[in-house]
Image: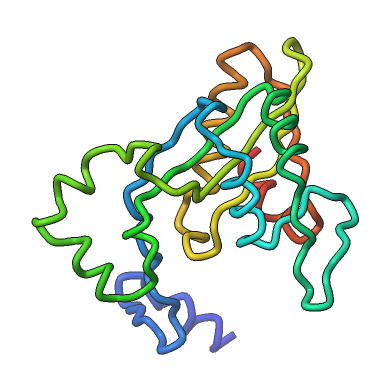
Length: 194
């Protein structure tokens, strides 16, 4: 009883929360990117490189090399998949923003790069850093496939933007029954989007 009485006298105003030493670092902002829904801007060879860098396989049971890497996807099959996709979302970034160091983060925040960061990235000047596509019957249902982001830019909200754009495209065409094809490992991440 005495313990209960002392607990009830604590007010939320008297509690102070200090970050512990194990508090994770603040999530870094994504670099300036351009998001496109034009499938003709996606080069199958760049898409193959993106899949390879993320160790992503389009196979349900991928064959892995001795080093654990997924086998590369055939660019011819990627071209066919792009041509038959109902919707495609691709993300481009200038190569200079893909450098992974703190100096680049500091320089990117300065006034000197303000206008460059504010202007959209032209696809011809950018590197493919994110991708997603959907297949659909065009009337009732659609499924989202192959959502991939380059590893150095993962956990910065780019994958979420790809899925949100895909959902916006599909719902604008009257398609509300959607699913996402993903592995067991990815299931908890993608379930928060749909």
